[in-house]
Image 1 (tube, rainbow, N blue to C red):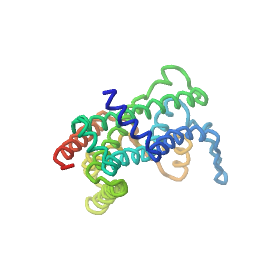
Image 2: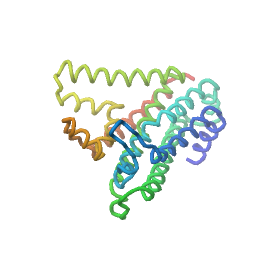
Image 3: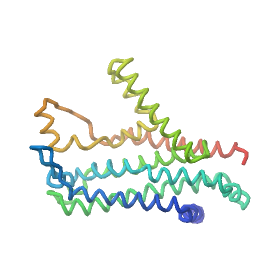
Image 4: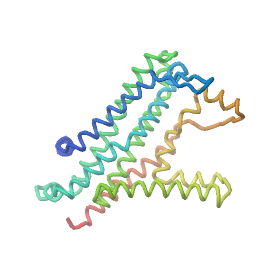
Length: 278
């Protein structure tokens, strides 16, 4: 396992673009801390994120994992490029000639996916602890370490998304086309959902239940937006007549759906590579 992972990391680190994108991703994650120093003025409304509880425990777990998850596309590009380079530079064929089986090849890629998701989760965990204990009004142990299920959801979300990117990279072969296909699939899910939800079935909840099983939508549902949980947002909403109730919890069923998709993507990656003439 260490040997396979070492091979993949060496490929990524020797590629300048992949190296820059990976470092950019983790640098951008640290920029979440800068939100504490930003103040927004909207006429009579003055918003100070830190003072309004954005870094309070346990809310910070929800907020940071949601924001960090939206930066996942940087690592997605790395994973897509990782596969495209295997075809462009002939390293895939050379690895197989050198004795690496196709099963080991896919396994090495999946180990890289797990590593990226794990490091990202640990990074967000440590950063959230630092920000939380620096700015939170509640630092009791029982409060600070509650709602950690958002970290589990974050890890599973990255695992599923990166596995999807890995499959598309093997399926399409070219980086630009793979990212284009990913965008097209994203638009397909969102546009078809909107048409069925608001035009065909008149806002029926059945549409939500069906689309909860779609790959990108199931990943998105793991961590819903956290902003409407803030007291200042609720106050403004009540003043303009909007009383919104939303389920912010992480659901075990949603995690299972994404894990099933992850297994499907890895299995399809292997079957596709096994049948393909290299």
